[in-house]
Image (cartoon, rainbow, N blue to C red; front, side, top):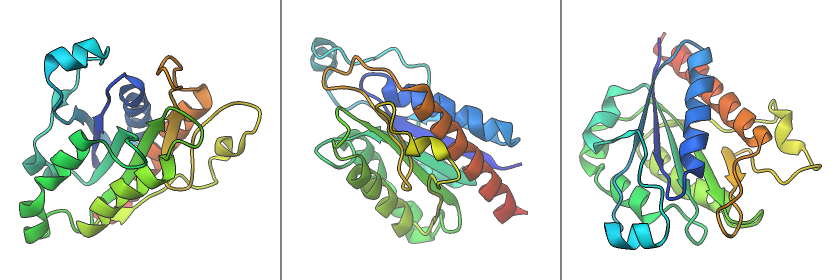
Length: 199
């Protein structure tokens, strides 16, 4: 049984919802799944003034525990076409893991959200995936076996680089069911891949 970590940062809850869908997909493949988030670095008064979702159930992850998992699926909203500073700060603390090669051969994947359809989702996913590649991880994307990402009848996310959703400029829009299905598909594929690599 593969051990899968879904690691995320979510300011407004969209990525948290996607993380839960990814975990659901991984569990359908028999994976032992843990959902954790990275620490908030914005002062609490600023976060509250900007309506951040601070009541998230997931525990805060420590970089040292990444080596305990067979697969790590990383999600964060876009920040000017790259990962959030909260997620970047977390990965900046993994130098010791890199020095030991602790994540080499593990499976990695990405997911994200943006305010608009062209809000930097793919470049954000690349900013996530470069960290995973530098750690020596085997990357899994959202392949076109998931046909939902080809849907042109609704405003949806999804790309070959990972699952995604569109939150809207005011963050009021919730993930479309097609996006959630893509997240489940990605979670299941990562779990299957990890199980084969550890067999």
